[in-house]
Picture (cartoon, rainbow, N blue to C red):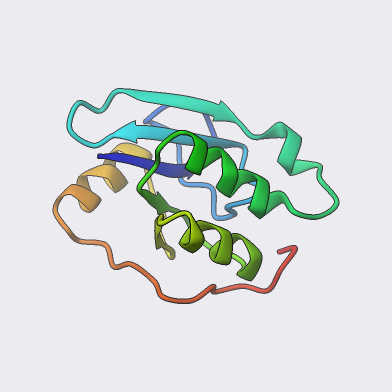
Length: 119
């Protein structure tokens, strides 16, 4: 399964970035092989608005099924849901450990955004 994790860096040893749309990197990880791609999110970090929507489109284009992040605002949440991507918020820690927790079903999906827009 392809999942995406917001990250402060471009490796599995980095920490989860608490922001979705304005995170530094989106790590797209295969949960079985742990092969991953680090997508630099610099264009969205400096965007005046719509960062979450643009980041959601990146995930959808890459066939991501699940997002693990610290927080997700309403516009990004709506876009992700429309793309069929399950959202897990309140995720923190080391990326590799977070993937392990996901694989053990230790994380819980959310059914609503947990921050206001432009957070």
